[in-house]
Image (cartoon, rainbow, N blue to C red):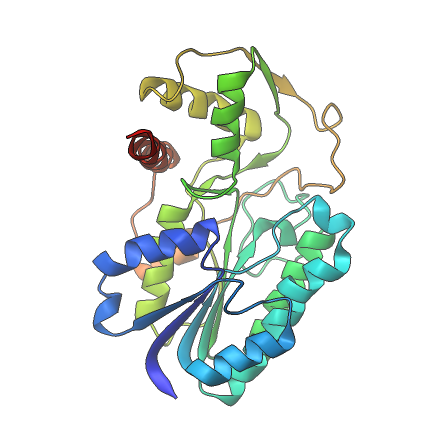
Length: 303
């Protein structure tokens, strides 16, 4: 067992890409050698691929960012979602328990049903509304069952970044192409930049004796409509949009989706702030940092 090997799963996803971008400038390279595994190297849908990779590389720490995240598609692809969000985590957690390996597992606000109407605490009762939330909750339980002292579940909500597909990038694209936009205004949550989530991940890694369930978000209590308004304001400010367009608020009934979403998914981050001595983040400042990265990547690709 090589305690200095850190295995990152889901390396090709938006959180995995942010982790890799931030890793070299952190203090972690002093202690860990990063193994970033994408689907080609470690296919989370295949038990043999998972166990072969773990046996071959014997990491001392796994950060599991890999997930089936297509919330609506999951309703019709239950088995595919279960393989990655539940069974893969089972295999990783069981192997880790037998090989003195710590696991930090990323999860979601979708494990809750949204009926609480005040920020969810880490130990609040989970009650997912759909397949994505159900399978993610099963994954969490695998971590806590096999690794009660060496497992961490870190939940985030409304994740976005300059990488991959997410609400911020989709909104900017639609705002460029459409003359007006309608966005749901009766689902309340808290956007989370992968930048801030990775910083919390790094603190969890540094504090190697920590275990249990933690929450992180960027502190807002807003609707998707509110988020879209701010995205447009900042994207226009930094030249990603030539003009603003009208954005009208919609109800969930106006915009039906295959998967039922929690009407309220704000996560209470107080215990995470306190445990790691972190400063509160500003959701608008976190969005600004990502908008500037989107602009920088666009300018680089235009050259």
